[in-house]
Image (tube, rainbow, N blue to C red; front, side):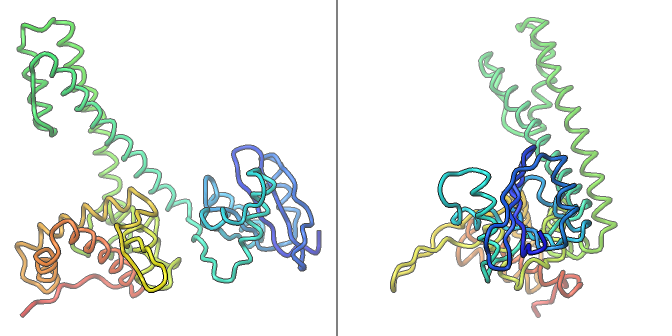
Length: 339
């Protein structure tokens, strides 16, 4: 056990696989451990590098391993896949993690704190509740269409339509009662969303890094809190271009020989954060119409040159680049006059 150079842990819900290599890169052991056995086993080992995939519960275990004196590293899962040999099983997966860890140019995922994961969890809860509210309005529109009651999309149209249902005597009283109850469910979910929005707004006001990111035009509390929870101070990236690649806002390349073609954006990374950045970019375009500073002038020229759809992606990419630069400098974004 004293000759351990590194350990690789294949994480799971109940059964974990631990593989250890010696200084000659030979496998010392590759064993299965239950959840309750893993912490005890790792605590008994001498401090060493511990590699896991950045996946379910990986940040929690990385914090636990660090407390035990080990040096944990999280590897993006897509980098491990090519190293799996033979059949897909826990034994080969742990060995693949160990093999992948030896790559010289490998980039690791920064370990998130509990506070970061709390904010991310709240965003996930809010995201689910927003979907639930949309499902309520869509169901109401679909059901009432069969009765000749048509109303457009939108929250106001839904509320007005439900209020009108109460006067529709051609519909059965019991049916009207259950349709009207959809509004009660809608109001309940909306209240939960409002509570989360208020909490995230307070967190944004109290967090200096959120205020730095929020100074960028088009970035609100939701985007700022989500971005800082996932990006932190940007220490996981070496330059301003890397965050845009990480979030999937750069074009996909198809190249062979002297031919190279740039396609649509890759859409890698977190879909939710990318959608917030895109929505913020759309807001920045609207905001730029009424401003004459240099940044707004650049936005208006960009929209005129490439069109609104491409401009939105370019602005979203610029927003995350600016966020990384400002976080590194710990400075607010300042608008410059175009004159």
